[in-house]
Image (cartoon, rainbow over all chains, first blue to last red; front, side, top):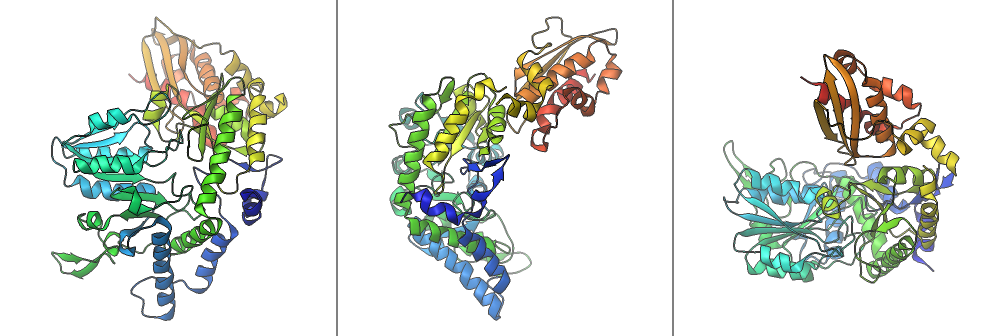
Length: 405
Length: 124
């Protein structure tokens, strides 16, 4: 059975009628839809077990704490982390990058360099600009080749003794390019730089194993991987996390407090001040269970096939241009495209008239848009419930789009 | 098929997007402003030729969607011949009235960007 035939009945929203058509949701890279098990796990948690975690000495407090910490264990197993202490819950990918950038930023000195790439999402650019700004450090960037791949020669040239941090996406949210995380991280380590990987577009789609990726930090969001909004994960190699001085204070992140000083709590709570997103962590646990049942190898294969089909059929439509690596190159579950003579916003609005949801605009990657020479693109993206029929519906709609405005 | 787009944007927007009347450069421009829509990266530049307190000519350039292009075209048309004070009072409703379309909230910035660029150009 095809994966989408198996999964679609689990996603109640896919029955929605939009503008008279059955919803064709091709915007999962922005945020995925949620299976019933995730929605029910959260509502069950609120209906039966909610209380604050960690310091409530009563039955509900213990249940909530057990569920929250069980979610951490599930994440640890899902990403192949060496220990649960390496798994920090955040509010999402952006929050995770900011957490690291804030902490590492305080250790930067004038002349230090932060190396990013031209295909980063703004969330992996701005925190580094902010970190560099006040310390006299510089942000440099690795260009992208005409085929949409990272220029690895330029990466080697730009990497040097001044490089303190190398921050890059595992999978580009626009081009779908998969970056060689282990290779880049090993090279960065040779010059003593920390590596921070934006895994927002990888965690929902690829099997992950932190022990083989070689990076120091890896961060992703729940809401793009079938889970709820408001929670994400920052994984850090234990030594790298221990070397970080916390920059966010509050309850839970301390052991002992005096008026003028405090002692930090152990990992991972040291980086989780305040009441965490408990119900969201419970929802994320259900999402991970759902993905594990499908098997991430199968998920990756399903989405790879959809991306390949999309590249092939869209390229064949006159006036449609597809960005990023060709059909023969493995890519993530996104395909960016444009229609000659039409602005991406109009493409998205016209497709919406047929119930087809795609993203349009700069995708929070303006430097990449500039290097592609466009203001924006449209983008189709996939998840476990996306089907080959939906790709055909998109292609069919696009074929006649230019005559519609 | 055409009716779907007609229902989406209305005839005025479609017509002005296909054949804008005030798109182009204005070598005699005395006031110029440019801004972007952070939502989508759309860029609109308004060029005004102001003489003796009156907007003698107005043009726009830029890279923008159908709604934004049509709105810029309407703004340029509405300000030509008006005094600077009158032009500065131009409001989103004046433009939306001409466009005769039901603009969705998510696209409202597309329709109002040209007015905010006009106001920047008119600022002394």
